[in-house]
Length: 370
Ligand SMILES: *[C@@H]1O[C@H](CO)[C@@H](O)[C@H](O)[C@H]1NC(C)=O
Ligand SMILES: *[C@@H]1O[C@H](CO)[C@@H](O)[C@H](O)[C@H]1NC(C)=O
Ligand SMILES: *[C@@H]1O[C@H](CO)[C@@H](O)[C@H](O)[C@H]1NC(C)=O
Ligand SMILES: *[C@@H]1O[C@H](CO)[C@@H](O)[C@H](O)[C@H]1NC(C)=O
Ligand SMILES: *[C@@H]1O[C@H](CO)[C@@H](O)[C@H](O)[C@H]1NC(C)=O
Ligand SMILES: *[C@@H]1O[C@H](CO)[C@@H](O)[C@H](O)[C@H]1NC(C)=O
Image 1 (tube, rainbow, N blue to C red):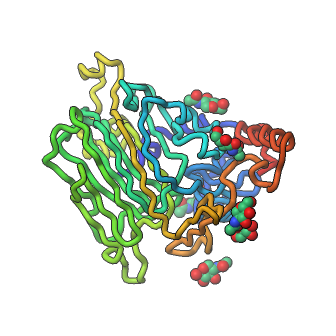
Image 2: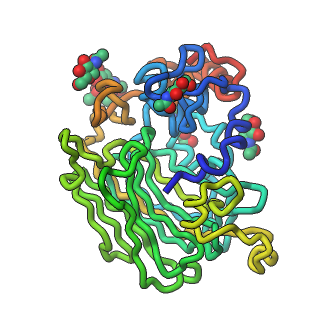
């Protein structure tokens, strides 16, 4: 389905970006200017945070305007300790060794050691993104969904050119899960692409493991370790020989978002189970809607081998913008936003000074370093 920020929250997002944004919009045919070279996931040009997660290389000034994407790392995340979650993504500097996740919007809480994502009538929902990317791998989230019509719980992977793999949970249907995938923002041709997988014990009251097993040739969706859907890349090839299959490095995203609100397309509201009832007793009692995440496990299956001795740190886009299937290069370039990370080698106080200037870029004080 439609990533919720595009539907619900663009104005808030632009407000959060203010100071580094130019009003200029961007797309693959109209990329960003040198003065604001990075095209954000929402299609606006800027510097700083615009160049990190979600930055679209095909719509940015050059293919390497966006910072390299941090390499996948095998991990199991639990959430009793939330110190490695950055609550405001605009403060991220690209150091994925420091933060595992950034909050793109909304807020989280610690619910007896589980992560609670919060939706209120005014916050527009919550979304959290991994700082690292996955370029094929097996990702499992153990979670409890919302149970309210119009409210969507989601666990997805999303690339910077909008290859997307979804688990989604419309809140009005708590015995089923929906699977979906997109290729560069479009539904693969000629398919009714979503899958609905029913028969689950109540997804609000019970934890289930939802898995995205994304491999170069196959994509499998599992619930509690049992495969419920498999897609073969070879089955997505169009008449021109192009596979409509996700192939680009992707962040893992978890969200709770309001689909049943004024301004949402009618089809989205229907899919979500109607308009949200803000007078729901659960909402009255808790003062919020929420979904709980107990853990996320990521097992990387990089498409190329990454021996420790190679010093590989990141993924970058090679080839050119008109490639139907982008070329992904495994790179030793730094993912850091600041100039210190971009000039090698740097030492001691010079490094600190440049880091400080780098933060200036994040905050929109000084765009020159980009
Ligand atoms: C790309 O952006 C330009 C400039 O904003 C706009 O005129 C054009 O319609 C956009 N193209 C697409 C396909 O969205
Ligand atoms: C995030 O930080 C930026 C820059 O300091 C600030 O403008 C923005 O209001 C913050 N957002 C939130 C939600 O706190
Ligand atoms: C990234 O963060 C880690 C952990 O906090 C820290 O040790 C490292 O120095 C940081 N790297 C840079 C380039 O700032
Ligand atoms: C990795 O980095 C180390 C230390 O900078 C260097 O000695 C080594 O040659 C690098 N390896 C490769 C394959 O570039
Ligand atoms: C981009 O790739 C296409 C298809 O591979 C090729 O025809 C074209 O010449 C390339 N353009 C540039 C500028 O390299
Ligand atoms: C990065 O890779 C290039 C070749 O791609 C190599 O020349 C360089 O030494 C590498 N740097 C490090 C720090 O490994």
